[in-house]
Image 1 (cartoon, rainbow, N blue to C red):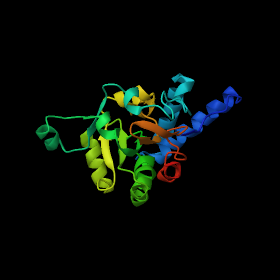
Image 2: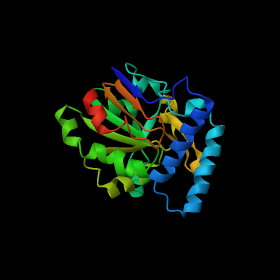
Image 3: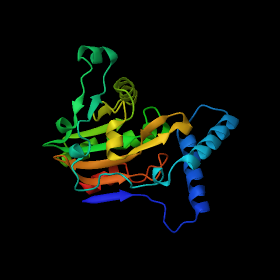
Image 4: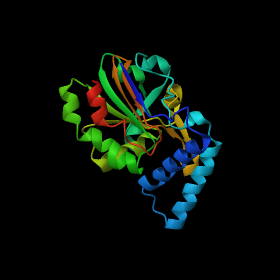
Length: 235
């Protein structure tokens, strides 16, 4: 059983913590490759800093998830369902069906990773590709499915998955109302970046609903512990 996360030391000074927050925020702006001028990027980063000062400390740099290795991911989010990535027409024809968590996890070996949002920089350039290129290694270890989930609607997730050409390797799901991530306390408020309620960047290895390994990044801009290479070593 493994839990890995990056955290700010409790011995750090307030100034150091604020500096770390500021650096992480500027990184999020840069890595998301926002199409803004230098002045607009600076203004956005400043807005994010102001927003961070209003956030409680637990919203930054945490392995503060409610769940941990050994917990049942289905029981931790009772009544919660995800929405399989699909086109609008497919949504209509399926009567906007959802997928209960037990259908995703029970009796299966699953790797699941969450990220702040479709079409954002680190998510598109690093996070999803790390799993996409390692899919054969996951299959060799007996993994039944690799799942990507974000606080997006399933139609956005579908279009993004197609753009990344990743649908054949990875199952994409939307958490349109954020209930899944809220239940696990893996949610984060990114309103200062005009994203609203979102997900932390994280990954987990789950066997028959039981979490065997959980990794949570310190900040949404970072990509140190939630990639495929890390979780492969934990299986």
